[in-house]
Image (cartoon, rainbow, N blue to C red; front, side, top):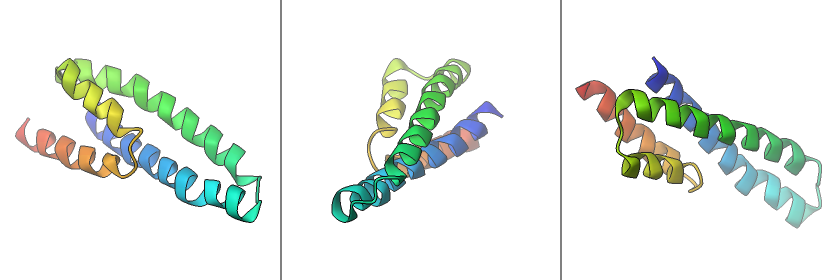
Length: 96
């Protein structure tokens, strides 16, 4: 169950990063619409902190290597990497 929750959180967190980078930031710097960034930024920050905490719990439960956990952590800061991570986690779910 925690792996499924982590996969869902990973996608939501990744989408919040994409929204922040490709909607909120351009709105601020291209169109001077400043109200979106604080809300998107705070939401993304809270989701990211939840992601880090849950990744630690899931990595312990699933017996991930430190390298895999670091890769999963890296996927949280690279745009679109959440989808690659989800595919990998899905294949791990099927084999376990």
